[in-house]
Length: 424
Image (cartoon, rainbow, N blue to C red):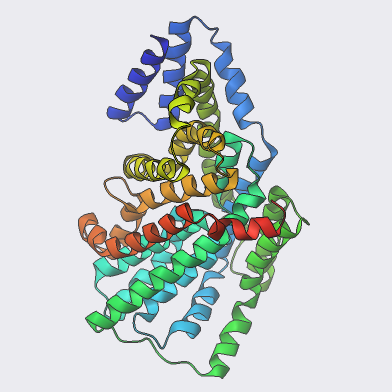
C-alpha cells in the first residue's frame, strides 16, 4: 500500500505538471506518512544525496562555459573547425558538429551548447543557403555531444546517484563514443548537403589553417588541461573544473579583454541556478531511492531478471530509456531510474562503467526527441521554424546517434578500451 501511494502520487503530479524535483519530494512525503516513518528522514536523505565534494565541479564547469561564450573564445574554435572542413559539402553543418564536440569537452551541458553555438552557427548556415529547419535540426542533434563528451554534469550526477562507479572512468569511457557520434553526424551532414546541393563554404590554404590553429590554440588547450589533468591523475574532477575557470578567466579578462567585472554577477547567477537544480534533484532522488529500496523493489526485480541474457537486458534498458527520454528530463530520469537499473546490471555481471555510459547516452538522446526534447525548443526559435519541422530534419542525425549507441551497448570494448588502459 505504501509503494502504491508513492507511485500513484508521483504519476498524478507528473500529469498535472508539477516540477520533477518537487514531485519527488512530495511523493516521498506521501510515502513517509503512509508508512508511518518520521518526516525528518526526508531531510536526512536529501542531505546525504547533496553532500558530495564532486558536485562542486558543476558551478565551475558552468562558469567555464560562460567565460568561453562571453570571452569570445567560441569564435576561434569555430574558425579552427571551419579551416579543417570548409572545402566539403555541408561545411558549416560539419563545423557545427565539430564545434559542439569541442564545446562539450569544456562545458558538458547540451542546452549551453545549443544556445551559445546556435546563436552563431544557425544564422551562418541560413546565410549559406541551408534551410532554416535543417540548420535547427543539425544544431539540436550536435548539441547532444555536450553531455556525452567529458566532462559531463549528467555523468557526475549518475555516479553520485548510484555509487560504485568512478567519475573519471566513466568520463574516459565516453570519449570514443562521443567521437564516433560526431563522425557519424558529420557523414550524414555531408551526404544530405551534397544531395541538396549545399555548396562548400570555402577552401583554405595551409597558411590559413595554421593561422586559425594558432589563434584557436589557447581555447584548444582548455579541454587538454581538463581531460589531461583528470585522466593523468593530476587533478580530481573538482580541481580540474576550478583550474578550467582560472584558465578561461585569464583568457577572457586579460588576453581577449572581452569580459568585464559587470558581467560576473550574471555568470554567477547562471552557475548557481544550474547547480541548485542538480543538487535539488540529487537530494530529492536520494529520498525516492531510499523509499524504493525500503520496499525491496530491487529484490523482487533482480530475481526474475537475473535469468535474462545480458544482451536482452541491455536491449530492454535501451528501449525503456529511449521512451522515458522522450517524456522526462535527463537529470530527473537519472536520479529516479539509475539506482534501480544499475544494481540489476551489476548482478548480471555488466561492468559498472559500461552500464553507466549506456544509461547516460540513452537519456541524452531524449534531449533531441519530441515531445519534450529541450534542444528542439532552444534551436527552433533561433532558426525561426516550427518544432515539428526541426524534428523532421533532426531524424537522420538522431538515428546516427542511436546507431552508435547500439554499437556501444552490444560491443562493450568500444567504450571500455580507454578505461581499461588506465586501470579502471
